[in-house]
Length: 433
Image (cartoon, rainbow, N blue to C red; front, side):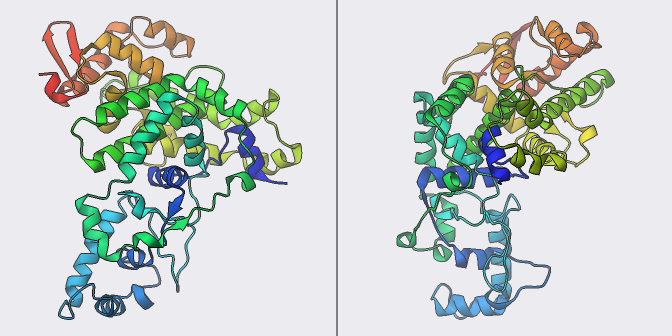
């Protein structure tokens, strides 16, 4: 019996507590199929532990090790090393996913800030092989392969200041280790039929990813490219679990008024709760409809848990990729509200380089591709009612919410209003001026 067989049958990966950096490591491991041990990086960048810093993790032992390896001069002080380690910790652990993994310590997982493939490691996977699954699906289409080509170009770029800074404590490029992909053994084999089905299901989102990658070629820094790519891929995953696990197209009602309108905030919270509930019930629904191809004994291993892991997975993704607020753990207070980076990414995914789009077209594309709804489309009120959101008035609620979102776009220099009622959007600030 195996719980993983149920996860495989449901979504093709194991939903769990996952940060974007966990997904990034899994995705790039699947793409590159190589990784490094990075022992010296780990011992340098880890600066605290509940049991204290011991062995090579201690400042004095690490200082001696650096001197022996000719990494620093013997006149380098311990205080200078402490300050250097604090800086390294801030750079290579900016998602709080790095832990001491070498003796005398051990850890349930470890991931570094993704700068290039030289920072890929393969401790215990924390993404449930979601990154691997997305990689396999993207390989099934031409736009998906365009995304993978962009990702490969980004992750194999080694000419960045941060990588040069870390080079003395990185593994030699020849010390690379082949990735031992355990997905087939743990989960099973993904059939061509299944991969093609998901690829077709996610066609709009994959096309949007490819367009975003085209836009990212235009003057963005290496680190911004990688960050935006991972947020976009996780957004793709967020839409996938809702489209595959539910029975209708996701509608995520956003409140952009800062909570000033109680009806809008309540509607957005209800929208979040509704989509979370769909996902929370997805295993039961798939099993009830005969779409969960697994042994009943395996399914019964999971059902007594109450599917709390699905609740946590949905909420973690929604918050960490900028779909929902607040970051506090109370689910009942969460609502949908796009954050600035996610807004910029979505505009780059629907507007071609050099093009300008009117806001009405942008709002339709945001809703149809990414599920983002704020009341800007002519038929939003009807659609919202079909989703059970009945209490919103166009003049008192939806129009002010739309204007608040337009103001955010203006503040980000992604939109201008050359005349009353005409709002023009672009993917780049300079093009909207």
